[in-house]
Length: 430
Image (cartoon, rainbow, N blue to C red; front, side):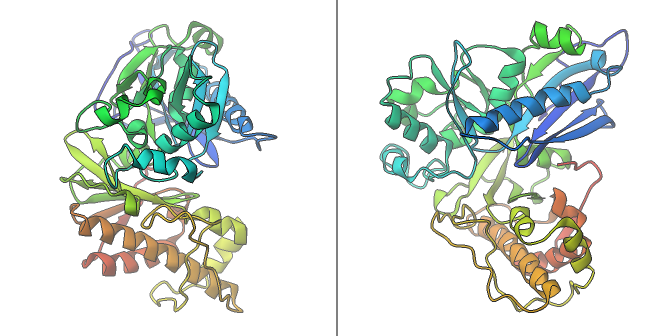
């Protein structure tokens, strides 16, 4: 994914194909591409509504994974050289590495565990990425404390993509990637878990191996291969996070290039020559070969819009918005209490009042307010020392709203001190 790889072989002399599966906040989708990035097949599945406890989410993800494998056209399956999966950052599970039994979670990306924060802050460096209630490490420490460590003999922490990939390769011990492992404390500069983390008793639950995204992990399990008709040479590769995958889809890695993912939430990623991280603001840096992908994820985004409007209403009301005219309404749209970036505040409340009589004006105010949060995020990254934004690509469902794109272009231009070019490249399917 970060580098051109062909770990598997070709089938009957046909060019190899690469299967990528994206697990977002509301559904999963796949794209089957060749070495030039051309899409040969794609499809999507919504998650089944989880029933009962949190384990329902895991069942929904598992079902979506195997439904998508079945959706790949049978004629293409023998040509699939490798498979990789992305998942939402800081979504994790505790799994028995011997039996596969789910012991804890899933703990979702936006779930906070403030009970574990003092223990994490007592061992981690000040303002480290893990010093946030929603970090993967806080989730691990909270589970460890609640279980008393008694159930941790064969327990291993797996990120969402780790677990889904494990269902395909079955390799024991846990294998992760250095993007997903960032929020559990993995140091991408060091290329290892730091000493302050490995000295803790719960460190034995960390994934035993951390690979670069896209690196080969193991062959596809025989039962999966035979059931779906994939090649014997098909290899399962390390994954990444959903927002990193959205960035990679833009096929740009020059410093100053950014991608905003407008899905259920708002995530921004900026290529920077400088590593920047500060948990006070929910800012972290992912390794991207020899540069850094700096950014953060806000809880604002499409989930708020869906609480207030249907898709048809959004389309109709947007037609009545003049994006060249700033909205005087000042909101902070959140689906519920809690914000991660550009301010890390688990107690922040949504601000969606006053509501004007016109629904179009109300929508205009919300769209503009989300754009201001985005602009504040990019401005904050620059203040912290990251490379300044020069170009912004957009991924996610929000990219389809032309009026919102025009609003964002105006607002981001003011925030960055120069006009920012917002593009929606055809290859972004996140």
